Image (tube, rainbow, N blue to C red; front, side, top):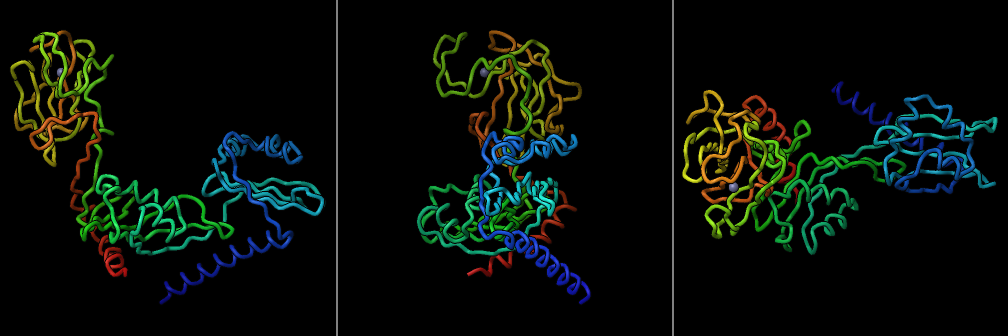
Length: 380
Ligand SMILES: [Zn+2]
C-alpha cells in the first residue's frame, strides 16, 4: 500500500513538473517555433544566425563546450520569440537526457544553462492487425515511425516482412517518451510478438537484450571473431571458380584469407572440435561443431595449437592453429568454410545462432516473460 502511495506521489510530481515546465514556456508567448537541428549546425552558428551574444558559447567551460558539440542531429529545437522577433527562450536537446536552455532574464541579458530534459514516459500496449504494408500499419496505429523501424530490426531474423499479409498481427509493449507533448528520443520495446499465419514469434527485453519466450538469445556469428588477420581475401565463396592447381572449374566452398605462414587462427565461435588432421586437398585441417547445426572448417594449416584434439571444447576467439599452405594450396592462406545442416554456406553471409542462456539468467528472463507474455496474449 505504502509503495503505491509513493509511486502515485512520484507520478503526480512528474506531472506537476512537466506541466509547469510547459506552462512557463507557453505563457510568455503562444507561438512556439519548432526547428529541426540540421546536420552540421553548431551552437555558435545558431547564436550567430539568431543574433544572440556569442559569449554564451565562448564563456562555457570545456565540458559544456563538449556537450554543445554533441547536439543530436534532427533534434527538435523549441524557440519562442518576443514581439520584436528576438529570441526569448530556446531549448536545444543535446541528447535524450540533457538540453541547452537559452533564456532572457528580467534584466534583458541572455543566459545559457545545460539542464536535464523534462520528459514524460508512458507505457503503451497495442495490437496491430496488419492490413497493407507492415511499417505503414504500425505508424497508422501508433503514430510512431521509429517504433516500426525498431520492430522490423528486432524481428529481422525471424520474419520475412515481405511475406506478412493481411490478418497477421503485431503486439507490442513499449515506453513512449514525450517532451512538450511531442514524441521524442528512442523507442524502448519491452516485449513484442509478430504473428504470421497463426504462428507467433516473441521477444522480451531483459538487461538491454532480447530473448524469446524460452529465454533463448540470438547471436550473429558474423559479428564475432574473424578467424584470422589477413592481407587480402584471395578467393571468395562461389559455386564455380577456376582452380589454379587442378586447372578446372570447381566450386569454392569458403573464403580464402591470405597472410604469412604462422598467422594465428582463432575459433570463430564456441563449440566442440570434431576433426583435427589431414583432409585430402585441404591439407592439415580443423573442424569445430557449433550449436544449431553449424560447423566451421579451417584448412591448409601449418600446425595446430597445443592440446587440440577431437572432443575438446573451444571458445569463440580461442587460438586453435597457425596458418600454412598444406594440401592443394598455392601459398599460405586459411581456407575458412561454414557448413549449415550438412551444406556449405557463404561465411560472409549473416549467420545467426540461437543460444540458451545460463541457468541463473534464464530464471530471471523467464520471470520477465511471465510478466509480459500474458499481457501480450490478452490483446484483442
Ligand atoms: Zn579455399
